[in-house]
Length: 105
Image (cartoon, rainbow, N blue to C red):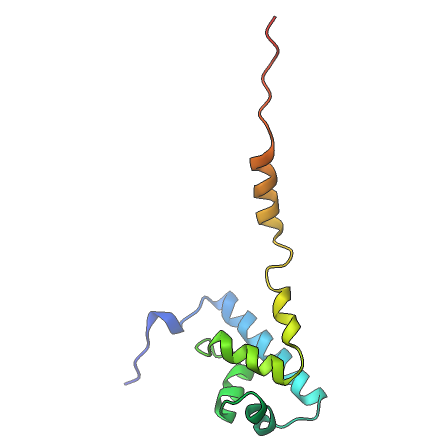
């Protein structure tokens, strides 16, 4: 019987996004004509870990993702995460608006 913890199960929407990220990393590796073993050696991790990243397994640490991006010379892509934050900016703008009162006559 396999042990499944709450931390390894993601909502379906997030699973799809993890799978997409894995596919993008795989395509970047293939475009560079690198094997899984070569990327694993450059990222100082196991080939199994690279395969798990490419499949979108959610238990791989963010540090390993960063090392793989670095091995593929894509480390600056991590800076694109949460860059736009449209909802946060809208909430900030709402908090900045001053409440205006009707004039007293």
